[in-house]
Image 1 (cartoon, helix red, strand yellow):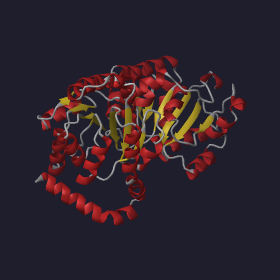
Image 2 (cartoon, one colour):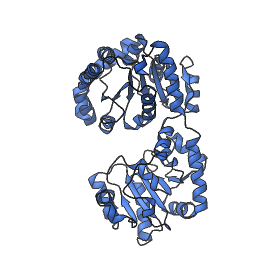
Image 3 (tube, rainbow, N blue to C red):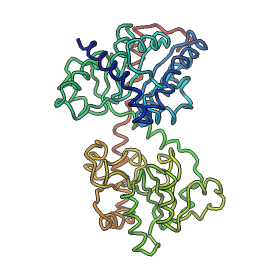
Image 4 (cartoon, rainbow, N blue to C red):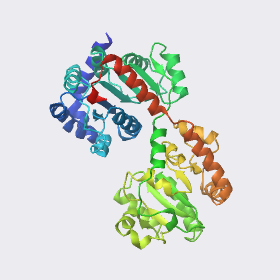
Amino acid sequence: MFKLIYKCVFSFIRLAMPLLKRKFPKLKEREQYAADAFTSIQELRNSYPNQTLFWIHAASTGEFEQAKPVIEQLKVMYAECIVCVTFFSPSGYNAHKNYTFADCVCYLPLDTGNNAKRFIETLAPVCAIFIRYDLWFNYLYILNKKSIPTFCICTTLSSSIPKNYFYTLYVRKVFELCTKVYTANKNEYEKIRQYYPTVAAENSSDTRFDRISSIVDHPKNLPLSKEDFPSQKPIIIVGSSWREDEHLFFQMYVSDKHQIPFSLIIVPHEPTHDHVHQLRTMFTSCVLWSEIENNADRYKSQAPSIIIVDSIGKLLQIYSLADAAYIGGGFGAGVHSCAEPAGYGIPLCSGKKIDRSPDAIALKKEKALTLIENTQELRQWISIIVLNKEARLRRGFYAKNYINTRRGASSQITSDIQEIIAKHQPFTESAQ
């Protein structure tokens, strides 16, 4: 009965697809290239007909960050293996279509029975790994039917449980088709045990902590180093900022007559041309990050007091310059990732909307994250914590400890995967 209902739902979606594509441009872009996935995986298998293949699926770019440490460990464990990565959203595909450790990157075709059967039979993966929550029934059903080990990692559940009966039923069906479900934290594990006791769940952690630690331990070269900034002025990174966040710092900038007692790097969540132009109008003494990249020698030992980052994909590395971080989104839909700056061992600050971020809630409890409502409270945070080296280091220690005590999920998951798939399919010497 469930399969029939699901099939009817997707039949309706296919009929409505022309209308949906007009209303949602990203869906139009996705469907335009999704059909190419079959060609891509066929070419992959033609090039590597007998190689051990791992299939990893993520909804978008944020979820794929959780996949990276697992992929990279699998590449070490199985040196001759190949990896196929699929995405649902254009943002994920466009950001990672040239990912170094993937042999094929493509969209996941719509979850119909025929698409799922054709995709999996062509790809012939030794196992499949789904990230967090983007689970599709027909794909999981075919994987299960063919006895291909299937894992869901960094799993989280929607707050709709148990309020939404149909969502709860769907989650139970897809989880039961997985060989093992690894939760993102203990709280998620306890929820699965409560609502889905028949699911093979494993209490784990978020692989992002491994990813963050790896990046912190192996930083990339930036056009500026901390030594290029005035030593007496701490560096504050405003990460993933929105207009409400930027306005707080603008008020300080104006009231202090442009002589703020810290260096400031603003990294907008959406650095569009209009947004960057507005920031340049607000902070008249600022310099764009692209200008520094194009003429790094000019700013050596004399970094500007205010920098606006006018491109995406650099925030995690730029946090390495910070003495403190303000994380955006806390005055809007919700605060952005607090775990990334926490990995650098610095004090954190944000607006008060953190209820959708387990990391932010935990970091606040650990006294690593300070919540504010206005410019006056922002000024107090800067004065009491950021400009006070002892307080800054103490709060930074709390943040770093939060990350360090949660590392290790990637090794746990890959070790289990190695053991489980070895029981299903012996590897040749070349595949190990």
